[in-house]
Length: 144
Length: 287
Image (cartoon, rainbow over all chains, first blue to last red):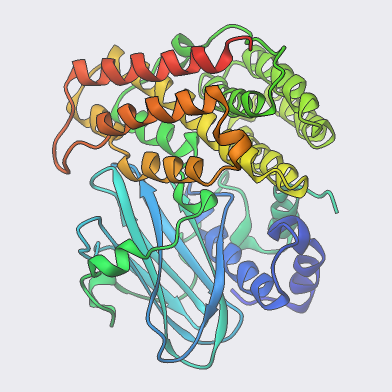
């Protein structure tokens, strides 16, 4: 799936509605990519949570971590978009700090991690730049 | 630009097949990409306690929506959502803080009505949301949402309605942020969580199982909400109702903080239901 110029133009036109008008252009671009990834999972019944986490990553920087609260039995996909073609690490950890196994999808600046919560409670999602130059990122999640 | 997120997504869906709605033939769930087990990814296998303690927390990512909780509950049992309906609430409230708490609770009621697929109840709740929204000076945003919610309810488009409700909640919070009323954003989340908890405990009590009861384990959510209360402006934080809510949340935090891998008893769930329900009643009392 590639972003066509027409697609990008429309998305940028709608960006204030999608992003709340608060993000920079690069963060908006990263959010468009994240929404595009999450949209693919919508086809499989996942509902996109109407919230996101935006930021910037730099080479050799340590991972940034977001706390989320998940429910046992629900399946989740975390979609991570960047404004540049960089390689990102994306991982989900349970409250004991142990990595939760699942699926990882990676395609250029698009990364997604799918997990099933086995217990209700806090989980941690970590994002880190593995290869490439500094970039903006946007993380959002879907559930079913 | 007043285009909603849903409209934006719909417009994007028209162009990108990847964003097409869930109905219809189901293509591959993942974009063309390298697929590998996450465990094999070149990243650390253990997150340190320091990293966990320093994790970012935001309302929009760290506080689950009622829809997420209700989805999990629906996997454990067949809930009788209509049993959790409540009558019209008192909408003659003077304090903005109290109005915000009740508005959050009403949005949770909206999720319940949608889960029950009851269009009359959706409209009743929508009417009360509009009244409280007017009291907070954000009726314009809610009227626009309210009309589409009514239309979706009449057309029985329940999945779309769930998205619309979440978007409504975010739009209300966004409107409060624009009015520089961040305190009320916190209180809307808080009111929604309390009412949602009362509903879920009521349903779990009707068909108790360890699996369904374990869903009430949410220590980090209550911890987050209590930290947010601590950052409210002194005027709001010192409000008698908010102080009472904070005190009772401390008790509720204990009830939802049982150890990982264990399940609460039916009595524990009832205790939580009674606490949350009492709080909902107190929040709705005429000041």
